[in-house]
Amino acid sequence: MTSTLSPEVRAQFREAAASSAHTATVDRAALVSLRESGLLATAVPERFGGAGGDGAAINRVVTEIATVNPSLAIIAFQHFAVTSRISEWGTEEQRHRLLPPLADGRLLAASAWSEPNAGAAKQNVSSTAVLRADGTWLLNGAKSFATGAGVADIYLVLVRTETTDDFGAEGQRAHYGASGQSFFLVWGTNPGLRPDTGPVLAGMRGSATGLIELVECVVPREDRLGPLGEAAEIIAGVRRTGATLGSVALGVAVEAFDLAVEHAERRGLLSLPTVRRHLVELSVKLESARAIVTLAGARSSADPGATTLRSKIHATETAEEICMDVARMLGSTGYLSDHPVARMIADVRGVALMGPTNDLCRTLLAATWER
Image 1 (tube, rainbow, N blue to C red):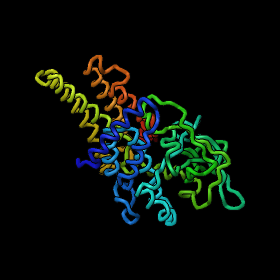
Image 2 (spheres, rainbow, N blue to C red):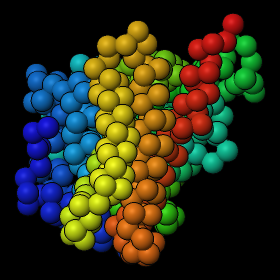
Image 3 (cartoon, rainbow, N blue to C red):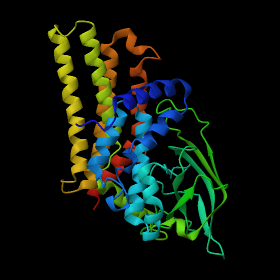
């Protein structure tokens, strides 16, 4: 794969990952470099100044960033996800206004969907948007685990726009999201949007994943994204793009495997047949993860959305196996809290918990056999 990162940027991103693992804060200099790298244009159509990349291109870029800094890769993935939704569902005015600055790094986008007690499937979202007499919307509520909190310029926020006491009723329930939910684009400068990056995560500590409060947050009518009450439809279509969080896990797995090879070379262990066989086994696991991420991006299967879900499950769980195997291969060194492999293990476990979580992926896939 042709490198999209210069050696200097790769070194900066890698150093930022090590720093963030200790400080639990995003590296601002690395974030500036990401904005200036040109990579944020990946998912923007060419007519709006972007690279016109598809799901396969997104997966390639995210994987490479994740080989040196998974936290930045998650931030980039969320930016691509929001960009793709604006490209597909935005009005022409929204596209012309937002896509060019999203492409050149002036704007960094993030998502704010999760919230306490909403469930992984986002079916019980309690944050609300109420239409006011002047045509603006008033948003109130709280979001949790929003990647890019406090560093993004614009957030794609999921809220209820219709009041119902039974989201689980027949005809109302969606597998991911629910009817009566809508998306809004909320600017980070909005005084009603209040980020809090106080929670300290075990992994992905440089991703600025935190809380978002919406307090009497006024949003103009032109910043609603997509049809009113049809957020579930937008969510359902996202998986068919082939862009997968499995690409982040794949990048971590590549980093862990490279660490194992470097360790074996440095210690002169490659002369041992058992070590070479161990590396072969690791490489087989790595290539299986790479293959399913590639397949998801290619969208060549009969059900691209299902392949995307499978790719997240397989890539994250395989990457965790690789990281744990590498830790054991390193011996006692691999269990030092400040060793890079400890950060890799925590990071890849974090990917499994990011939406849709691996458990939810299984639920969504199981639903395809419902009669």
